[in-house]
Length: 124
Image 1 (tube, rainbow, N blue to C red):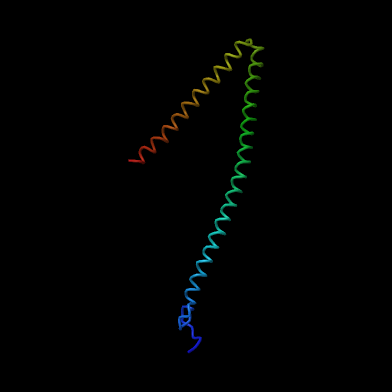
Image 2 (cartoon, rainbow, N blue to C red):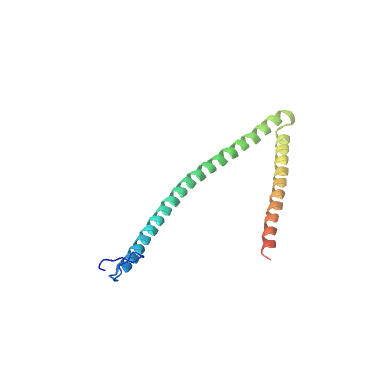
């Protein structure tokens, strides 16, 4: 019969509607892909912008904390100067900071060595 449709949605007489459907599907797929790429680009640019401003605030916070620690060290030298003199106070504060730096550096080396050994063991 004229105009009879097959179960797949195309015409029983092969008037090319299956080809049209495939072409429409491909066009829709391209449109979806372009929209998805645009969405991901805008999402990435948003994340980069927020990440950049977060990094700026993080660096500013680290700078403020560093300056606060410098003020603490100077204050310790001044406070101890009245008890043992400026050179003694400087030597004590310097010694304590050097010992703390060495202890922290050794702890960092141990942890980094543990990480590198984990990667060596995992690659075998």
